[in-house]
Length: 200
Image (cartoon, rainbow, N blue to C red; front, side):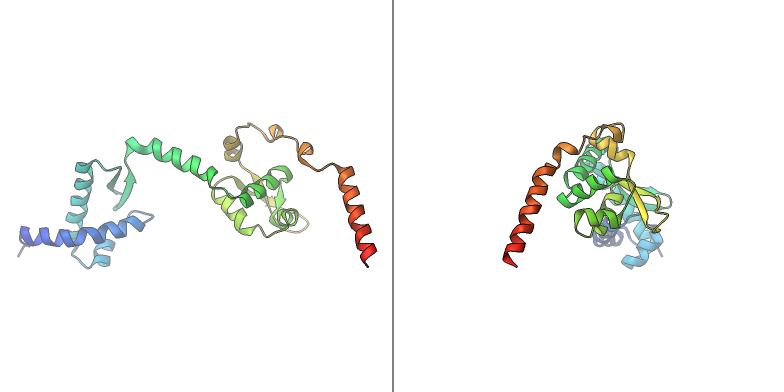
């Protein structure tokens, strides 16, 4: 005996928010059987619910759509808004780099290939988490291993060069103008040592 249309409509009304919640957190297409198991409804009802949601989003002209791809369902940005999303993601990644990430990236850029331990020593703090972030964002990549210590070495990527607007590392600005004057530094260290000796 088939389900009556009014019963199906009631089931879909109850089902759609659950499907939306599951699809919102999915990082890959979800097949109807998996969704049916998760929401506790028959597969046919879930398929009808998915189709109804997809049609509803199309009708409302939402910025996203629900697609049936590779045997499963998933949310996608509507094609006409792809440029807006791409601009936000690329610009946002650069804008959201923390001061620690920028400092770490600078050390890698000027000392590459370099190990995490060396970067940590230069910065004076542990950089493991920051390095993972830079690798995830495609700004830094692994560059083999140090033959002496066996540590992984890191270097900047082509994407890094693209983001800072240069074609090669040779175009990076010289560091010398940004370093303290060595004579001043020696004088400061000598003064600190004399103060320590006098107070001892």
